[in-house]
Image 1: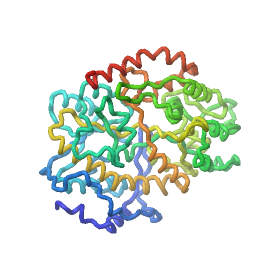
Image 2: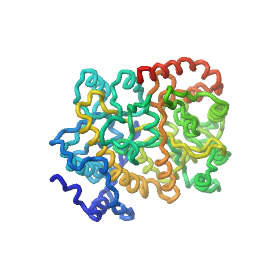
Image 3: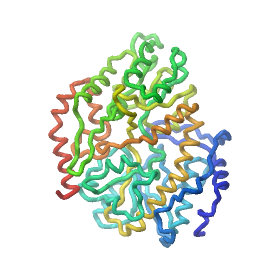
Image 4: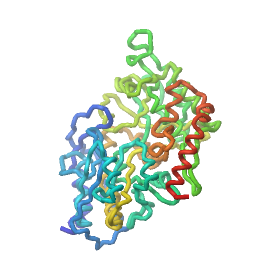
Length: 482
C-alpha cells in the first residue's frame, strides 16, 4: 500500500476529478444552500502536471509507522475546512480532501484525524502549558485575539520545522511576513487551511447594472481604474423607493449596501495595512493624510442616499442585494451562498482608493495555523504539514477554483480572471488576529468611525496611540526577549 498514491496516472486523476459531484457548503450564520449533486459536464479539468514534484522537500524514505496526526480546530456547522473527511460523499471539496489525505497517509504511513470543539483553543493552550503533545496542529477561526500564543510562547517557530518550505507556492508569503516577529514565525497560512477561506470582495448584480444602462466594470478592473470614485459613479441615482413608504429601508433599491465591518475593509484594500514588522519592532500605520481622507470618504457613505448602511451588528444588508435590488455588495462569506441568486452576478475586488494606488490589495484573514511549542518530533510534524500543504495545492485548490467557483458561481470569463487574480494577491495584516492593545483586531479600528458616524481620524488616533504602541512594543519584547 505504500506507493499506491504515487502510481495513479494523470489520466486516472483527471477521470476521478471529472467524476466528482458538486454540493455547496455554507458559512457564518447564513442558511445552508440546497445540495447540488449534478455534475457539470462543461467543467474542464486539466491533466495533472506530471513535471511537478509536490513532495520534493521530503525524504522519500520517510515512514512514521502509522502515527495519528491530530489537528484541533473550531466547531462550525456552516464552514468546513475539510481537515479529515471520513469518506467520499460526492461533494467536490470533501472528496478532493479525502483523496489528498489518502495520498499523504500512504506517502508517510500516517493517519490524519481531527478534534473539533468550541473550546479548541483552551484545550490547545492547556496542552502546551502542561508539556503534552496530544495535538500536532491548531487551525484557527478568524478573527480572534492570539497575542498570547506569542507572549506565552505557546507556538513553535515555523522557520525551525524541518521539511517545511515556506517559500513554496502553497504558503501565503504575506502571511509569512505578517506573522514573523523578531526572526521567528509563529503562524502560517497554507493551501491546507486557506483553500476554502476567502478574501474580502465585492459582488455585483450584472442584470441591474445592465438595466441602468451601464457597462460591467470589468474593463475598469483590468485597466486599473476601478476606484472608489468610479464605484460611486455607478451608484449615483440608483436609489428608488420601491416599497413606497417614503423612507429608506430594506425594501428599496440602492447602488451599494454594506455595514460597519465591510466599510472597514475599504482602507485595508486601499493598502493601509495597520501593523507591519521590522527587525526592530512593529510599525503602526493608523494615521496619515491619506488615511484621514479615506476615513472621510467611507463615513460619507452613511449620508449617501444611494447607499444603504446597516447600523446593526449583522448582515441584514445582504437581503437587499439578494432580492436583486442593489448593484454592489461587499462580501466576506462562503462563495457557495452566492449560488442562491437567481440573477447573474459579477466578481470584483474592492476598489483602489484613487488612481495613485499602484495595484489592488486583497485583504484576507482566514487560514491561520500554529504548531504547539510542546511538539515532540519536529521532523515528523514538519514533514506531515509540508505534505498536507503541498497535496492541498495539488488536489483541493484546483477543485475549489475550477469546480466550486467557476461555472457554478462565476458565470463569465472576466469574473473568473478577477477571482484568480484576487486569490493570488491575498494579503494578510498582523493586527486582525494579533492585537495586544484591544483596539485593532478584526474590524475594530475603522469600524469605529462608521459606527460612531465620526470622521475625525486624527482625534481618535491620538486617543488610542499610546495604548496601541505600548501594547505592540511589549508584545515584541515578550516575543524576542529583547
